[in-house]
Image 1 (tube, rainbow, N blue to C red):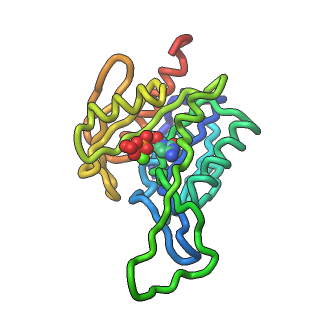
Image 2 (image 1 turned 90 degrees about the horizontal axis):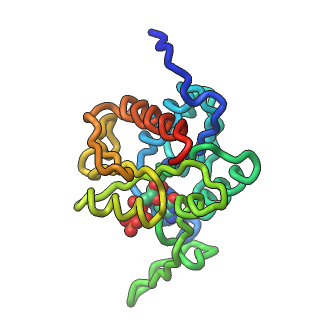
Length: 225
Ligand code: CTP
Ligand code: CA
C-alpha cells in the first residue's frame, strides 16, 4: 500500500453527507426506490476524511463497506434520512452538507400493514405524497452549512442543473448525465456555480471526489460565498 500524504484542507471541519437511494414501502415486502449504488457518495466521504474532516454519512440501502474513520448512519426511507440529517445538524452542526443521495421524491401515502394480495380486476392504485426536500431544507436553515447538491439528469444537463442550483439556493451543484456514471467506477461531471459551468476531466469516482473536496475547501476559505 502506498501512503498518500494529503494536505488536510478540511481539518477541524464537520462534513455531513447523504448517499445511496431511499426505499419507500408499499407493503412489508415491496417498495419504490431509485437507482443508486452509493459509490459516489462513499468516495466523497472517503475524500473528505482524507482531507482531515470529521465525516457523518447518512445512507440509504447500499451494499458497500463503511470507509475507515467515518460515522455511518443507515436509513431506509426519505423521511428517516430527513430526520437523521436534521438530528445530526441539531446535535453537532456541520460546516458542509453534501446531498449525494438519490432521494425518492414521493412515497406511498399509507403503506399497507400486510402484504397486498393480487386479485382479479383493476390493479390497485398507489396514492403518493411528496417527500421533504432535504437539501433545500438544509440550505434554508438560518445558519446553513455550505451546501452542495448533485443533479443526475437524462437530458438538458446544463439547464436543469443550474435551475436546480438556483431553486434550492445552493452555491454549488455537481451535474452528470446518467448514461456516464451509473453503477460504475468512473464518472464525468460538470460543476455549476455562480461563475458558470466547469467540466471536470473524466476520472474515477475517487479522483472526482478528491477534486470536489478540494473545491469545497476553497469555497470554505472564502469569507463570502
Ligand atoms: N434531494 C434531497 N431531498 C429530496 C430530493 C432531492 O435532498 N427529497 C437532493 C439530492 O440529494 C440532490 C439534489 O437534491 O443533491 C437534486 O436531486 P434531484 O432528484 O436531481 O432534484 P429534484 O429537486 O428532486 O428535482 P427532479 O427530481 O424533479 O429533477
Ligand atoms: Ca428528485
